[in-house]
Length: 110
Image (cartoon, rainbow, N blue to C red; front, side, top):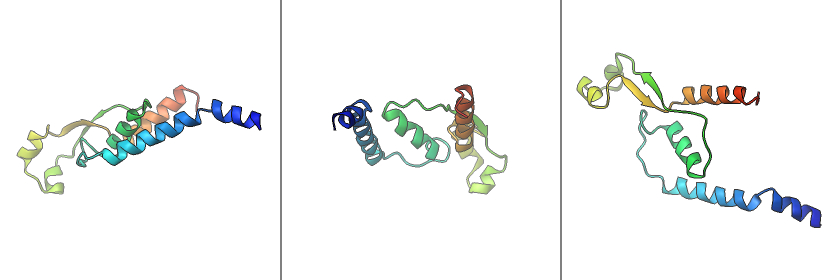
């Protein structure tokens, strides 16, 4: 049916398949080591979506590690200092969720 073919062509399916292939290539080639602060699951999701041209409505936030983080994770306080101290800037799942919720509200996408 010509109508169905026209609709498929105009829905951008070829572009979506290309985008999915590009995303899969990004995922398969991603070899950055996981780090809770600078390369966590949210960081990966943001980078993956940006790699295919999708603007993600979240930003890096500053958050503070607990004062006893050295005891919790068993590292020396000097190491924490060398890594940037107790104030950390990066992506976090909680902040990303709030950013997305705020974005949806601003855009009327309740």
